[in-house]
Length: 343
Image (cartoon, rainbow, N blue to C red; front, side):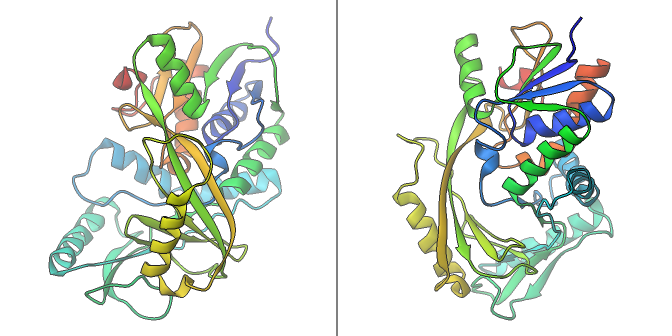
């Protein structure tokens, strides 16, 4: 008889949220990762928990909203179980509006936010005031109050501590026991593609930088495709690139372009010192949505992958979805998130 009910391969945010969901239901859980906790793309710098725009509503957007709107409670519980901070705060986000058309579109989306987000969160057009704002040709910004931040490294470390506090194991190596969840990120997508002899996803390189600048209580900024995320430790993260084609996994000149663009778009950061540069490979499933379900080739095995840019924003509820499937045999996978969507 197996002494472990669920083996989870991968100690990134997907694997650890699945572990927490399973162990909270009484399962005996072991997380296995030879590289350690948060060693892959979950150990990045940015941590932007930003919603999709509130228009053309669909099940994916509704699912994401359900997770983001309850993230306060989830991450507070993780912090309590771990006895350490996760770097979470709902600080909102500011985005510039380039012209009159963008202003009209933003105001239309405000009506969508009222319909789909309810009265708990706002999406509104505001004047650009103060130093902590992006440059805006119209002098106007979108301010949404749903966006939050997380500190990726602190969050994964706290998740690992929380699951061990509840009796699970996090180890470098062990044999498979019980049901097996493969949450192995970009490498897992490549491995599965090789096994199936067709592409089901790929890795996308992302690069980011960390600056010494204390804006801990300020909202996130977003412009020119860049996320500017103030963290509570007196740093600001800038990210990131999305490189489908790359020859190596290290930091290169594309990050310098990101830093230059960020300093041009956000003048307040022009003199901030760079304290870290980071590069990592994020898992992008063929469907571009998270990839969840039974492993197509291995009985008793499951896949949890494809977080790409929304992993931390989706993971808390995706962990519950995997626990439903693995422990109870109940399929609560959202439409479009099934493994089959990427096959």
